[in-house]
Length: 295
Image (cartoon, rainbow, N blue to C red; front, top):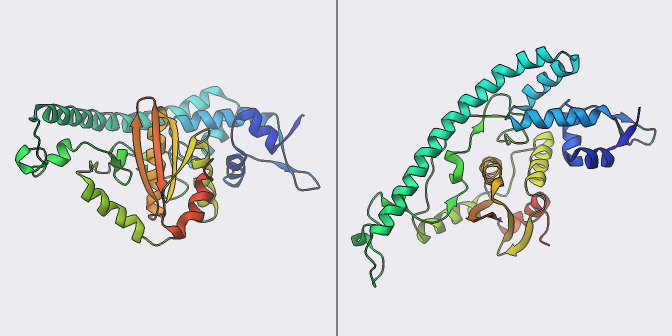
């Protein structure tokens, strides 16, 4: 049987070496060791990783994937089908809930645009008399960025039973149960400034450790792979394809649960997603460890 080193398996499968090591620690992937201590994998590892990737794409938790891999290894397709069907049905129900929430959010944005277009053009400063800053208007029609704390998180599921670590992402770490988080649009610069003070004053400490920290790092590295990078004050800006927005927002929301000193800002720009990540001076090294240096 052909043996592959971890770098070769990563190249063949498209799965980063950091993720391969985590899969091994989670019991999803096994490796032999050479006398020198190098990991060696059989050709069957490529098929196993493809199966794991397909299960992850369906939003299954690592624990569920481990159970499903055991059934898959037994070789009976009908057993895989029987085991997988109720899991997909559960994910489908959750997705339909999120789709309903997304439709409602889309309607509110359309209403916000209609309200904004109906406002008269005034030469003076915007104030409550124009209607845009009337009480409650900001939540309905406050144009601007969405904070990643609440960010797209009303549409982003949160961890449920079976997630391997607190806040780990559904894309790379497990399924999320349908527990919506309020979506709040930034009403203006003052409110944005108040939000900024929260991350500035948060302690520079992460509640993740061991496998959880390793998995989260692997998730971020995979999610931002190939991003264009640029330095911004106190952090960096990564430009990615817009189709990664759900995955990035989910990871950002999870990251703030364990590392509230990070500040995430997402900006949609046509086919591009611009992600700005900032941290206080004491957290600069952690920011670089997680996202890498600017190019």
